[in-house]
Length: 264
Image 1 (cartoon, helix red, strand yellow):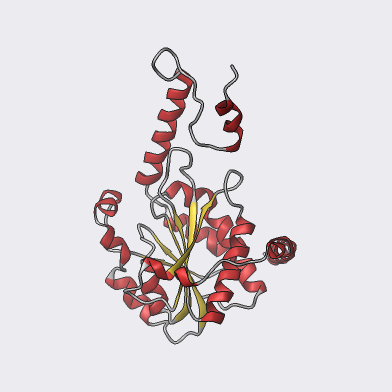
Image 2 (spheres, one colour):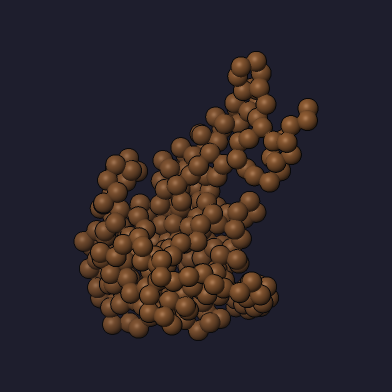
């Protein structure tokens, strides 16, 4: 069959050129769709074992804090987005005792809308981001682990930690081509009430099919330094990172990883 759509399939994960059986999809295409739909539902509904993730953070020699939102179930998380945007009172009180520390970045990890993504990629991405930040001399606070959080919760955590920047690693809403994608959001001068226009986002972090950990970490470090230099983030902060920095950054990152692995 001389159909150009079949040639284009090699360039995208979108469901194009599926073929047909009579007036319907072929059985293989239908089963693939149903499998992708099931994986997306599982990613959303699965609870996150935050204690196990905290154990992985501890093995990296890092301090972690397990915090909570008022959300009591995944069903409530989906139905009440507002509850995922604020801390439970006990967690708020715990962070308030640490406001005297001087840090550049409050780093948060949450399962968000995909526990699958955090389980698959969260720890490796966190380690890579920390290696790049450390190489640049940026001061990081305790790693805050919060199940069932929304992106805006980083504002409250960053404000309570008196951080100059808040960065949250969060599971993205799964689609029918990716159920394991992570996103990172950066906010300068975090405080409750910030809008989404004041954030920068790096999306589709899920090697090998999406953005690599190193590319995402180098990009986030560059945006972080630019935000600290300019005094703002969001739509006003343009991504003008020269391409050469990715290549040189990859080399530096490998040296950072070698050093961190030998220290463990």
